[in-house]
Amino acid sequence: MPGRPSSGLLSRLRPAPVAVDDVRAAADAVLPGLATGRLRAAVLADPARGPVLVLAEDERRVRVALHDLAEDMTDAGVAPTGDGVAAALTAFVAARPVSDAAAAGGGVAVLDWTCPARTAVGWRVVVRRGDRTVAWTPSDLADAAVVTRTRTAATARAAGAGGVLRVEGPVALWSHPGAPMLASAALAAPEQLLGRIAEAGLRLPEPHVVVTPLRPLACASAAVSARLGETGEACVRLPWSALPELRWL
Image 1 (spheres, one colour):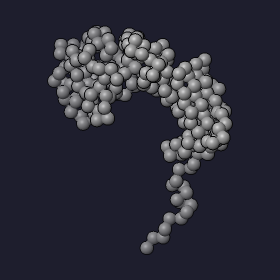
Image 2 (cartoon, rainbow, N blue to C red):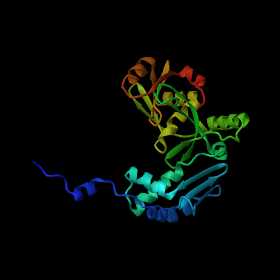
Image 3 (cartoon, helix red, strand yellow):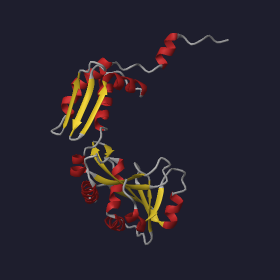
Image 4 (cartoon, rainbow, N blue to C red):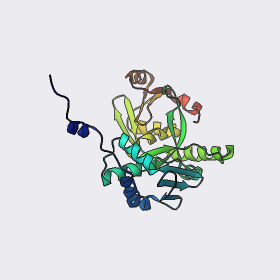
C-alpha cells in the first residue's frame, strides 16, 4: 500500500503565500509610476487594519488593506516574487472603478452581456487602460443629463476606436488586437463597418452580426450567421436593423 505523500510534496503543491511585506514592496515600486494628475495612490497606516492601499480619482475612492490584497493574490496563485506581485498590483489598480470625468473624457461605447445567462447584449461605456477595458457605472453625483452626454460622446468616440478586418469566405471578422472588448465599438457606426466589409470584397445584402463580448465580431448573411450561432459558445445573433434598439446598461 503506497505511503502518504510527504509534507515536502504537499508544501510544493500548495501555492506559495504572498506576504504583506511583498505587497508593500511592490507598492513602493509601482505606485509612483501609476499615479497621474487625477489618480492619487498611496499606502497609509490604519491602526485597526494595518497598512492600507488608498486610490483616489475624482469622486471614486478605493481603500483596501494590504493584508486582504496579499490573501487575494495568494488565492489567485500569484507568484510571491517582485515581478509577480508588482504585476498583480498593477492589474488591481488598472481595474479600479471608472470616474465620471474619465468616462466623459475617454469612454467608448461597446456591447456587453446584459445578464449572467449571456443571452442578450446592450451598450455600455468603458474606459481603456492598456489592454484592459473597465466598465463605467455612473456615480450618485451623475444626473440624467451627465449620463446622456457621456453615452453620446462614447458612441461618437466608438466609431474611431479602430480594429482589424479579416474576411474568411462568407464571413467578415472584426477584431481589436489591443483591447478585445473594443471590437464591438465598430457597431456604433454600422454603415461605416459595412462599407469597410464591401471594400474588402464581401457583399452582405442581408447582414447579420454575431456578437460575443471580448471576441471578434462575425458579420455574415442571415443564413451563414445562423450557422455561426450554433457553435455552442454563448453569443447573440442580431440583424443589422436591431442594433439601434439595443438598450444601455
